[in-house]
Length: 257
Image (cartoon, rainbow, N blue to C red; front, top):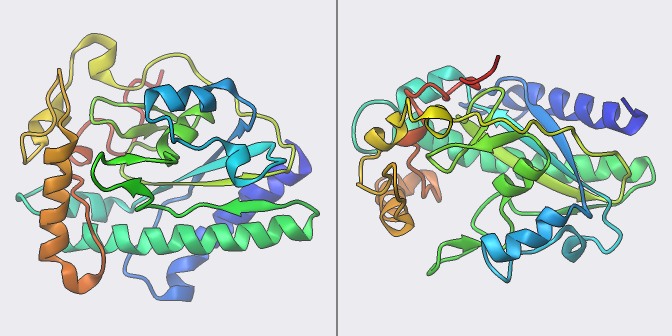
């Protein structure tokens, strides 16, 4: 492990571990996962075809970018279990969404300062709400960047399944620190994509948006807005999460050997 890699991973782990006490959050997080992508990886350019021609590449944020740092912040299992029942998101899930977005913003700013002290630069990217409100397409997909970094694989629910499941949030930072990419695993993590044996996430969708054969992002976002209206007093919470909980990939990679 390179020196700067160790510094980054220790910093992220310590920051996330101490955050609930420092900020008095209701949410707690399990130890994070960290992975790295080469900023010159050709798959970033491919996202312009896969997602949108306007999708950014790392050098759009930092002209001399060398690495994209991607990390996954797993929710405490209590948060995930709270969101199983009912049509609407649980209050705990909504609070976790809002507090994790703040954590990502704070962590990225602190990590950028840390990298600066070691002679490197970093570009900060908002954790969410950086997307076209009509097409519902992002100009920077944290999940796809994390996928390129080898942090996980996409499940049927379009979420990133990591070694610690999919119940959590992904953050990214672009830096000119030369770290080296994380080795990627070629096998699938989603049981449905492997042999069709699952698909539980589609059954858990409460707004008829997710099916084994298709995904209606407009219906998905409509449910998110329904929750945002219900919990407007807490802040901006256009979230649902029903397809992430009470499924085999909630907390683990179910296809791990």
